[in-house]
Length: 471
Image 1 (cartoon, rainbow, N blue to C red):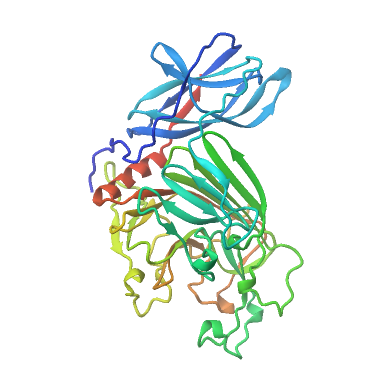
Image 2: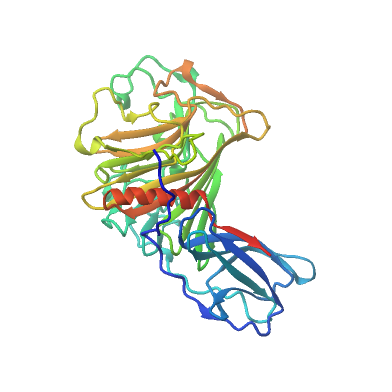
């Protein structure tokens, strides 16, 4: 299908960042930074994050042209290191607005004793959450004018989400816990089912599995079962970043303690969230690494799970290679079935499994009745090994699961057995396999077909970030 270039302003644009008049007198010098828009899409309060080095670490200010003068804007300086003779290097993040195809010049001033770094003006909140049904040291609220996000007290995983531009109701999920305990985290990944094919027991039936007559021959290692992992928080006026990492133990829900456990960790993971002050989206990335030789039934990442009643429709945008110039993929929109209690008789949880491609440009869940909208844009997927050998990768695809009065979720799966948890279907993974991903999670107000067209604009924005070049 032929399509004209996208040049529309983003409807959910953030307010312009505050600024302060700036006097360049008394500063030792500056470095100039040119920021340009690369693909003909107007940008409003888009993050720019760039490395820098300056001769002096005494003070830092980021300014932009304002008429015949300059004005200071909120900037966040982090990963700072001192160099020889008082020099400094690090990174600076700020929000930038540009017209389609436009460019802007910024200056990073340095070297005025006693002036500090000039951090100011956060317009989002990061604070301890009010006490609730689950206690723990990592219970936080992250909020800007677009969303409110609550983290799970035991491990900081995203627990609940409110789309403030939609219905502003709490999105939650129940795997084990109902609302009386706050439910379970909506961000479920990464996770892996470590298989033990020698433990298959064909005798008594497992009551959890109905008529199936084998014991659960696996352990489920997943980060929602973390308990106070190692954590690094970077907070400032432009973004909040929460990174957590460490071994991922088997969760008691899917562990048979009648068997001996491995002496050391089998799986290691890292999960990073970055929330920006002026955007309706947040960024999430993860790494899962095998620490020992193992067999698996599957590995999953980017798994977001929601109660089935929140969303009634799904939009999917494929990512087709080698399209003709001027062509574009088309979005598929389908009703979700679990919401209407119309699960097909042959579907056992996964309504669209191997039917789906291995990756999308994006997908979106939305509800026309109340305006809630969620979209996921995958920006990175990388599979590698620490040894340099080719990674083991079998049956990689996207899975959509639906269950009435239970869930709607998407996940990316690797080495998946299609629910055939039998000894002959395991995949052997040597130690040192790495699975990495990076995603944008957008919260928006669904208002009909125009909302889906705006997702195309967001897709262009996320895949073609602003260019920043020091001069």
